[in-house]
Image 1 (cartoon, rainbow, N blue to C red):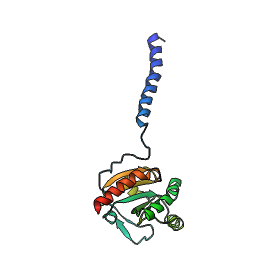
Image 2: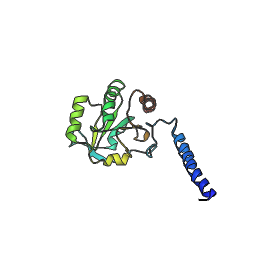
Image 3: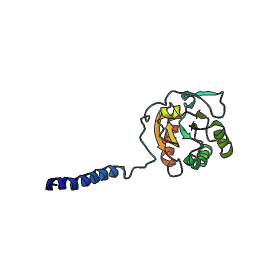
Image 4: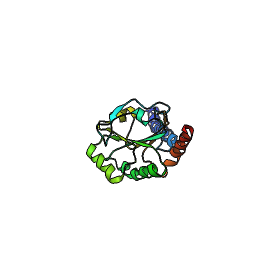
Length: 182
C-alpha cells in the first residue's frame, strides 16, 4: 500500500468521528420531549370517529373547539402513559384543563377498564384502534400531547410524559390562550 493510501485510511475514520461529533453536538441542550411537528400552526386534521366510552357517539375535530385544550395520545400498553395518567387526572381537576384523549392502537375493553380504575381526565377519548387519527396527527409514539387553541390550531406538541417537569411550559401557553379566549 502506498503512503497516500495509508493516509486516506487514517483520515477517513477521523473525518467520520468529526462529522458524528458535529451531529451529536447539535442536539445538546435541546429537550427531547419537545419535538417539532408539521402540525404546529396548522388546524387539527379533519376526522370523524367514535368515543371510547360511548361507541355510538360520533365526534369530530369540531367537538374539540371553543376553548384551548390538550389532546393526549395514550394507550394501555404504554408504560409511560400509565406514569403520566395520575398527573393528567390532577391537572384536569385542579387546573380545570380541558383534555381530550386519543386512545391509540388499543383494545376498547381494556382502555375502558383503565379509565374506570385510574380515573378519567378526558372530556372524551376518541377510540383509534387502527391508529388512523394518530397517523393524521403525526404521532411517533405514545404518549404525545398537543396543545390547541380555541379554533383548533396546534400551538405546541410534547412527545413523552406530561409531568411536573414538562407541564410548566405547556401550562403557561395554555393559560395565555385561555386569557385570549375570555
